[in-house]
Image 1 (tube, rainbow, N blue to C red):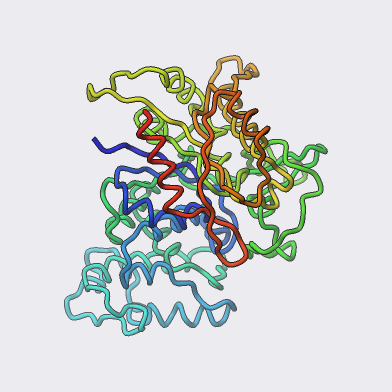
Image 2: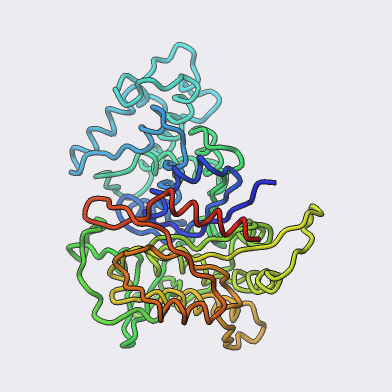
Length: 437
């Protein structure tokens, strides 16, 4: 029986490993945060509300087979507002006479209707072209009844995704459509970490720093823009935080704009909880610790399920299908620190994960009483990068293993000026962990 994997992280670091994973395993679920508020996602959230879909769209594109339709959905519009609008209109140029593109009587479905001529559509079979074009048109028509929208540097995939979500009334249905159109393996699935209580509810995160100050918005925490009103994601911005991060939380805007944002709680998505219960390997993967991983953990239900499963780590048990199965809960640590984790050692990553999961357990308790379960309650394994940028020594490894965690090392590779995991070595370490069950 093939192992079932659950990967938790929205980070671009994991995106580069996805191509390796899909060659080795198909029964895999990716759970991603929906707090993205940078780039074209921020404009979509500003105008339409709802969860941030940028991380999900990015993961889906990485999982998709290479094809003209994947290239289309990976495409970004021109960087200036006027050029982006001109390019957008050119892409949809053959469809502007259709006021309701998904209506059964719309000329979108007319057999005599011309195919779009923009080069971006080249090589896409007509049935798939019509599906993508229709939802892009629906998105475009929705823009006409909304506030001014900035298309600059916009992701065509984000616009298709949003058109599908708005028309179908479901983020999960939009993910399913995207997966089928791009030919992602049916056993490979992608889900948001949470389900908002309303269709337009935003899922924003904030950070409380150790000096008591606050930052609001994922972009401001991880990649602060150059100016106050910019939403551009500047991943080269290495400006240090003025104080380390103490905790991450979800928040919403108050009715009175003069008041401080209101902290809110979310429950984990039902499918996320289901996969936490049933997967044989659960991985907290590479990515920004506080904006890609921890937003998926500080949800009601996550810590509670992991506690139950970790208690069963030492013995084999019966699944609902009647087959014997155990669980490994693995943290793949980043090979280098970023703005969120400046100066962190391996033990600091472990402690941050455990703190977030203890908070999740607190949310699940009726009294919301603080809890302090030990590290061994949530983790079985830690994979580190050999000779990476994060300093590691034997004493620290001994300290971590003393907490009940098995430590293994994967080789590094170089990508540009950064150390990244050697994909083959990382997969070998994951295989060894699964074989040890």
